[in-house]
Length: 345
Ligand code: ADP
Ligand code: MG
Image (cartoon, rainbow, N blue to C red; front, side):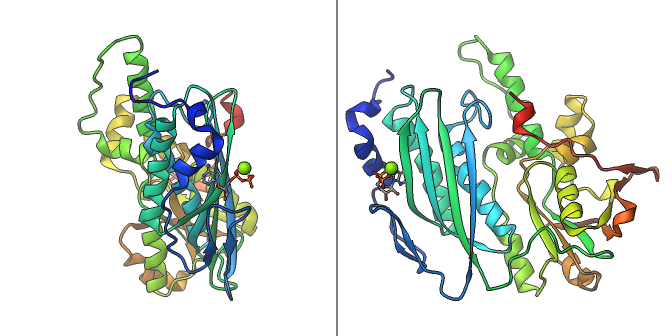
């Protein structure tokens, strides 16, 4: 055991829970009762409640050889907040359930929780409960997030109409290129003691992979400008896959312009270094946690003014299918090649 580390068995389940959940002041008036009883008590009054949950398994969704536990905690919470924002809502509470194998010490799990707590503080969310268990095979994290939205104002994937404009926030493909970089450095460093990877000039793509943010700011900007998207979702599995989801749910087609897909300079450099097709990486990389949404064409000017939003195409009748217009004018069908947990085992 590393020095200064505490075996979980010395605290036991309840001792660990106490350590993880001490001092959790409640921030939201909807949270009537938090951790410590058989259930949390929430009240949403006139609002609609939103619920989303995510399961993360070591070896499938994350690799602790290059993901620090604090970052993992932060990201585990963020991906849930992102789902609530993607419904046009505000995340308010989370519950966190963990399965922990004997490899982990109390300090490791506290490190994970420091990331979860930081995410909760940053986004104004209350941690109101969870469950704790031993695990045979590694670390398991399941987070459920509860949010709210004005009654009837939830934005689903199914409201896109022909002629609507397709928009995306931020830029795409960076998290994926960050992952490629981390995996490469991990391969190169295997077995080498004191190996220092050189990440200079690659901070942005690493941050996009290790410490993503949910686009609370974009939701606020849309509200401020009086724009309600007709359909919306977050980009977690890659733009291609999400475009197909919106088109299928809404019963429409779409056209996306290759040259309008927002890509950061570091992403482009990294793709070149890896000899990868940049647009393919941006369309299929995933883990961007940006918002993909559609707005009526009458909101064109309003949406154009919002910083960090790019109009990438438009919605069509379903017969036209879902296609990308390439730089040289060709039309190629959009295919889902996004990340799929069942392809990676
Ligand atoms: P129960 O027997 O009802 O499952 P527990 O002893 O597991 O209760 O949990 C006691 C309290 O601590 C509950 O309020 C529960 O929501 C909370 N809790 C348990 N594990 C965690 C965790 N990993 N993170 C946050 N809260 C937790
Ligand atoms: Mg329990």
